[in-house]
Image 1 (cartoon, rainbow over the protein chains, first blue to last red):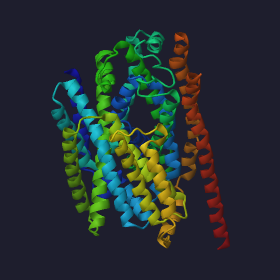
Image 2: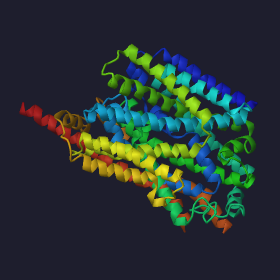
Image 3: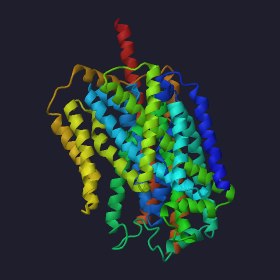
Image 4: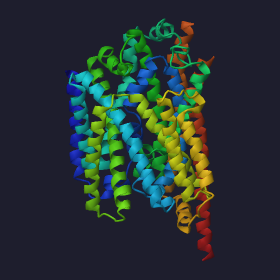
Length: 534
Length: 46
């Protein structure tokens, strides 16, 4: 009961913030990109909050509990690079375009409504799938802690995120995401010592996890492998982690729910600093989370479904006050992603599809009304799918993410740096990347086993690259396209450029110092206990 | 052995990213200096 009260209180705060901030939304720029005045803290909060969701705290936590905590952390080594790659190779150029949505950027870059609409459709399809997965995960959690049925939990979740997102748009999402970022970060960091204490103290808890006969190889670099395990051979496990890590890196770099956050940054320095803080946050949060999960395996080995492992730990292996923070933190991670996803879908439907297909420009007032209406309609459809479709938190999320990596990845980077890519090449690259992933997933659904190096996303990326190259042999690049590209390649100089640069210059040092601290933490909390277990 | 490599690789990835970022930030500074020189030259030319 106490957990339910804690969660409901946090829900009320988010909705209240949405109501208060909705009064400050005066025009579409404030609704879509929060007036482009986001600080480093807020953009970092949004980047991390929209990335971490129930996929991380439930889906991936469950996968880790099944026997792959270190393999998942190997995946994170590659995926976290996406923030630095993303901000330097795509995000800052996207910001310079002053677009309100990412499909608008693609449309303007290639001077093509067709490309704008196709990127908007992939945004709506891919993010909707992700939104379903995250909402379902949150509903499973709410139902578990409150005792209400799954359907009622789904309805409560829907009501909360739809209300504050629809009312306040990006403005409310930005403030709420930052608060949520603090809650779930705090929950993850503080939970580790308590969970380890419950599991027998340090280093015994990690030693026990490493020698647990129920899960041999749990803490080895490759996790549990063999004929009956999810991963066949250690090299296959490693290859899977590298491939998925690179895919997630691309997702972080170019996906609409990550790259669009840079559109809200006050200036380019803020975008770069946020990308760096987000990298450090992701690496640290994942390390703490998966060390905690490893310790939980020694407390209870039969949590089912495994997606509930962190929730079980919150309610059984930590003091009640911390349990409330953890449960509220997981809900916060879910809500923040749902809000960002819904806001992006609503913006794309109104601005990139309705306006473009009708070939008319809405006034600010019409745009705000249409955006709110489309968000409500989409959220109802998501709710119905959530009721009809059985929950599968991690794998639907992974499928949606791979869609963007394959269909947008090559075009996104080429749109900034290539002087040869044409509208035709970009269009077919998106279509073929998307189709490649769907085709690969269909093969898997029909029982055809694909080798790990021929993952559906690899099929999609290869097809996308071929289509980009071959398609760019057709069509011509207009002067407007060249001018747009020249414009985004020119770096804007801020009025206080020297002061901004002094601050930004310190950031590579922050990354390196964090790296040294993380090596020390990994060594103390993972490698040293492991040597004791050998 | 793999566990030890992971131990250094996990935090080490941040050190590598730090070095990469240092190069990018250094390039940004150079770009500004070049642009400022160009602007000065244009003004002198006028």
